[in-house]
Each structure stands twice: as structure tokens, then as C-alpha cells.
Length: 190
Length: 186
Length: 120
Figure 1 (cartoon, rainbow over the protein chains, first blue to last red):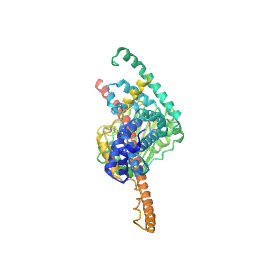
Figure 2: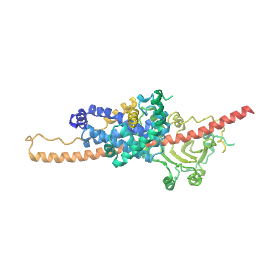
Figure 3: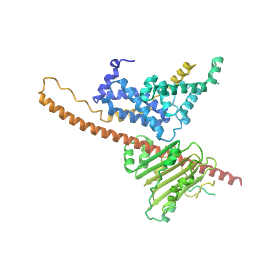
Figure 4: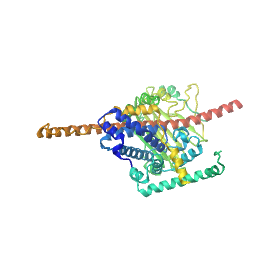
């Protein structure tokens, strides 16, 4: 949607390709929050998320010449992060997303007042297969549309839509019992 | 009743040990058939080259990674096989016997043997000592739906391993040599 | 209802910041490595003879190819190193988890033993 030529970070990308550290720093700082959050919610622990984030940005540094624009960079980073996280989850021992109490930063602090929602989300994420988890995060964290998600993950569009539909249904079931009383009584969950 | 043998007991045993040149590196089967049935598996093989490479990428400014660098010094290999299944009894004890039988060889000493009724987890820890230095560690943990084999080869500095307490959740292992403890029975 | 859930999910899944220490380390590591190889520059037209330009381009291509190869090798080494580091940390994590099982069993048994002895 954005016109690439008007993205000020495109100029920073060009500078970074020429080896300017300040520009490279800015690019890292711009994208690291999103990539770290994606890694964290995919892999479930801060250590693994930090490792993956570092690997991805190191790889980015070696591939800048192949990246056309800041928007392309965002796409590339999300694609590499998602795919590597999925590969790791398939290869490694199960990451217990149910032990998320150790990771207070997994969800946005702005929703800290809604612990029930967080618990439902936690359970939902833990139940999802790695590809489904990636779809959910790209949709609701990264705000990508299904077509963009399909391109990022190299996944059929119908599969993306199916994952989203099932995730929403699951979420709806888990929150249904909570939301009705809230609407009727206008009170907190307790 | 068996009780846990403390880590420092090996120092008392070491002089009495036969000092022929046993091999601290275990021959671990591929477990390919079990791996196909497992819902999760961890296969880690780190030879001296990879350990050296890994050490260079650890951050000495991070306390956890600096402690890890210390532990890695002198190590020749770390081998981990861990398989988790979605129901009980997918694997048999006989599957692990090929590894256990190697630990009956001269040079290996069982340091810890625990049998927990509460968690249904059995953990055996063996150590190999050569010239008063720990040169090998083997750990076999079996639970109803998971088994894990860890083999660490090389000059294991137990003091430095001890300093990993608090990092990775490594527990304080009681090292009171005055207590001759054994593992609890089943 | 669906929109409400979706908006709640968006709110809960807003990106979170990593630790400040990690960010500093990340930036330092990424910027300390050599940047991607530069593309050959275009020479100013009319300033250099064609023959010179041709041989200079050829030489630049060779240098670039060698540089890219070395860079790719270094990149592979970096990736291998990071992968090895991750495996070391994972191996120690698994080991400590199992040591903890043993420790808990021993601690539990010691507690029972102490209780029995004090009760006797």
C-alpha cells in the first residue's frame, strides 16, 4: 500500500548497503521489536528468541544487496524469522508454552489488566502447530493480510485462511463464557 | 534403601579406580525407529571443533554464557539424545540397555541413582575418572513418556559445573563428603 | 463478536521490546561484521578510455567474486557458530533439567528420611 519511494528508510537501506553503520543501526532498531516478538511468541522463551533474532539480523547484514526497499526488508525479515522458527520447533524438543509464567513479556503490557485473555491466548498458542502459530502471529501481530501471509510462509492461501478461521473459532470458544457476563453486567471478569 | 552418592564421593573413589584407558565417549545408537514414533526429539552432537566454534560465539559479558565458556574449556564432546512420546511405554528399557551396558565397563562409576515414585522418573548419573580428573559424564533419565541420554566427554571441571547453579536451572547438588547418600528405592 | 476478538488479539499481540542489554549487543554484533559487498560503481562517462574501463570492470568483477566468496564463507561460519552456540546452550539446558530431576528425588527422599528419624 505504501509507496516505496516515499519511505524514508529506503535511503537508510541504501546507506547501510554502502556500509554506513548508523544506517544499519537504525534499520536494526526499526525492525528488531517486531522480529523479536515474532521469535518470542513462536519459540516461547526469551533465550531462544534472542538467539534467533540475532541470527536473522546477522543474516540480513549479509543479504542487504539483494533487498530493494525497507518494505522488502520487512517482508524478508518476517519470512526468515517465521521459517527458521518453524524449522527449530520441528527439530527441537517441545517448547512448553504452558510455562509462560516465566515470560512476562510474551504479551503486550497494555493487556496486563486482562489476565484471562492472556491465559486464553497462551493456551491457544500452545495448542497450535508451528505453521498455524506463525499464521496467527503474522496476522494479528504483524497485521499482514492472508495473501501476504501466504507469500511470507510460502503456504497456499486456503491453508492460511483455514488456520485463521480455526484459531478464531478456538478463541471464540474460550472467551465466550467470559464475554457474555461482561456485556450483561458491565463488570470485570471477577 | 539406596541413597544418593554425593558428587565429591568420586574424589574418595578415584585412587582406588583402575586407571586403564577407558573411553568416556559412549556409542549411542541412532534410535531411528524410536525417533519416528517420537513427538519431539533432541539430537545434539558437538565434537571438539563445534565446541570451540560455539565458545567463540558465547558472550563473555553475559554471566550465563561466561559460565558456559568456562565449563566448555577442556571438553571434547557433548552428545544429547532425548525423545518424547505421546503415550507411555512406547520405548522399552531394553532400548536403552545398549547404552547402560557400556556404563558397566571399567572406568565408569555410578554417582547417582534415583528412582522417584512421585515423578516416575529414574535418573542415573555416571562419572569416569582418570588421574583424579573427571573425564566423562553420562546421564540416563527415563520417564514414562520420555528418555534422555547425555554424554559429556573431556576434562569436566566439577567446580565450574557447580558454578552453573542458578543458570539453566542447574540445581545445587549437595557436595557434603561426610554424607554417604544413595538414591531412594522404587 | 469476531471483530471484538480480533481487536483483542491485535492488542494482546502488539510487539514487545527485547531487553535493552540484548538490543545493545545485537546492534554491536550486527554492525561489527563487514557489510554486504558493495556493487561496482559506474565510472563517469568520457573520463576513461574504453579499454581501461573494460579491464577495470573485469578486475573489479574478479575482486568482487573473491570478496563475495569470502564473505559467504564468513557468513556460513557465523551461522555455524551461532547454531553451535545454540546447541551448547540447549544441551546444557537438557542436562540441567535431568540433574534437577535427580536432585528433587534426592531432596524428597532426604526430607522423608529426616522426618522418619525425628519421629522415631
